[in-house]
Length: 270
Ligand SMILES: [Zn+2]
Image 1 (tube, helix red, strand yellow):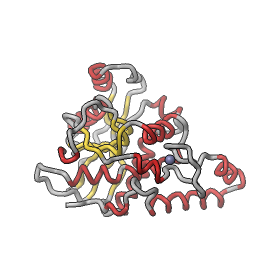
Image 2 (cartoon, helix red, strand yellow; image 1 turned 180 degrees about the horizontal axis):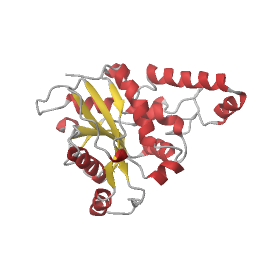
Image 3 (tube, rainbow, N blue to C red; image 1 turned 30 degrees about the vertical axis):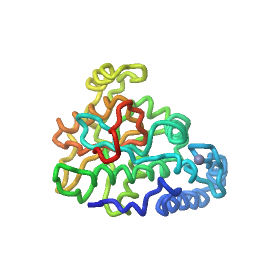
């Protein structure tokens, strides 16, 4: 049973109407604020995050880059339930993710969130466990180190989830964002660590945010992890373990890009 209305998808033919509406609203609000804010709006990059093209009116994800992103793709991550990615970690999607995460392109959040609508649908429509379809979803972003979030001007995954939730709600699956996990400030950067190293690093650094267990899931509410890139799967596994330990197990995860070496052999394999 299809939970999410795919006609709302943004990944195949440019931004959805919801995404466009959000951008139009943001621009209007900026112009109403002040001349300085309007100038900032003019200076902000409005080019495609994937290829740098600057379509009239501005947009973070052009139709050509959408065409180049073949997702959604199932990803096999043992211990995390069903996982789906918007596409592979290469080409325009890789550039857009890096631009959003590391180069200050916060304006890409609505477009990248739009790419996650189909992966959410994949997670909830290819189930084989007989579980009932969810009536709502709680999006739990994979946490960033506090220092990294400060450098990025805020937690990029929380921002992404907050852009995704209204898209899912508009598509018929009421969604909310719950930053239920946190990384200790002394957590090491996982870049350069192998899978075992990442797992050990994360296991000692992840904990429920605010020092308290996440709220119990409401009846029919599914908990879904959201991350930017999956590589070894260690981050998602560690997050899933903490959530399960806190009594709110995740049904799976959606990620923007799949950089794992091992993928499900074909699309129907989830
Ligand atoms: Zn493009």
